[in-house]
Image 1 (cartoon, rainbow, N blue to C red):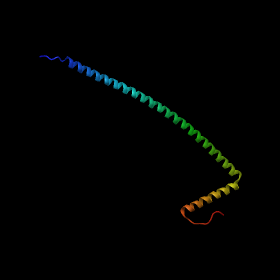
Image 2: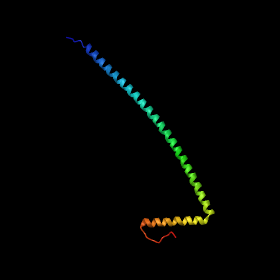
Image 3: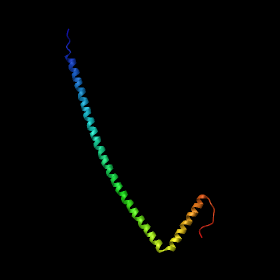
Image 4: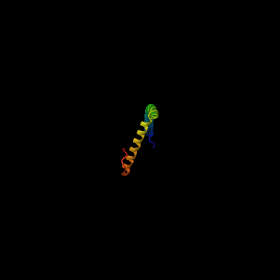
Length: 116
């Protein structure tokens, strides 16, 4: 006796076809999701690169301004020291004496008063 296996084979074929279709749809969705994620990541990288570039430029500008001010103050101080040597000696000695007092205070040494 021969059984009719056509409905079983047809049902199996339909099940395999549906499974393959679901796998294809899943892969298509995953590829779309990965493309969107890649686009977002590249956009974020571009934004980060732009911000880094802007911050670097701003930092360089601030540093160059500070350096120019420091050089200007240094030159002004040298010219002032040349023009007023007595004032320079007084300021230098006051600074030296303050440094000695600070050192003695920090090390706990007692000594003569240098404020004279």
